[in-house]
Image (cartoon, rainbow, N blue to C red; front, side, top):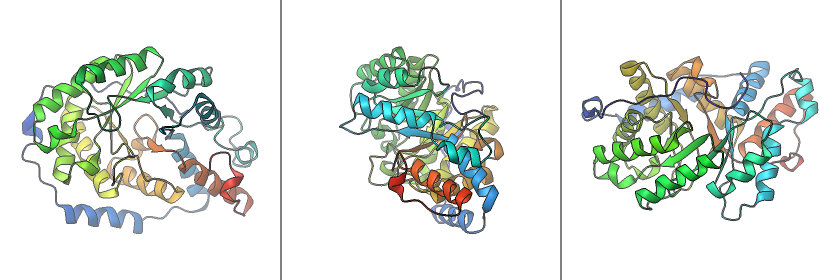
Length: 322
């Protein structure tokens, strides 16, 4: 599948249905054990590993969310998004007829016009963070206006942040209402709901927040902003994937998943892909249902693929994004 925009029907959401989650229990020790065994009992080697890494590359939301972002930096990132692997590696992998591209380029709202211009002619969507990222503490009207502005500038995906207090105080109706309003503000753009799981304290809160966001119409649920003290972890991701699996069984609607923050190596990407295949199924290894929020991950994937085709490792500085 060519990387890029979601091809599945949108998640239309449901009415607010607290009985789907209000009595949910999560055994933290069991979640940690399950997450640990996933990465020790599964192994992907040689050509199969290369194929998995190419797939991981296609699922990356190549991201820059720095205070010193510039139009030039965004243009360079977009150039790498369109050609994430050097031509010689693509040729040796036998992919010259359909060179891989990343899933999206993710930037701040003010950088959206630059990214849209740089990606013109490609099928790579621009994703914009919004709603007062990363804290999400600006007034709701301001957060909704930020979504609408980013969409007007050409963003096809919006990564919103939830108001964490609503989770910590168990005000699920308020969380539902706000995410639903954000979904409506997105229009045709797909909504990824960032739960900032490192701030939510318990896996039970993570499960409940996941379910509420999906009921409100989130097309993806996402672990983190990348700015919390604790970002994506496998136990948290397992909990969220179980929630989206439960939601799918209850509604028939497929919802995507995006881990973000702290995924830096090819091994990290493989671990999360194993989680998705084991817990959600093969279909959740495609970019319309799985994304990885990352900035430095791509360099290590390219380095590992270069080793696969040449038998030697290059220094990270040898690659365009390191």
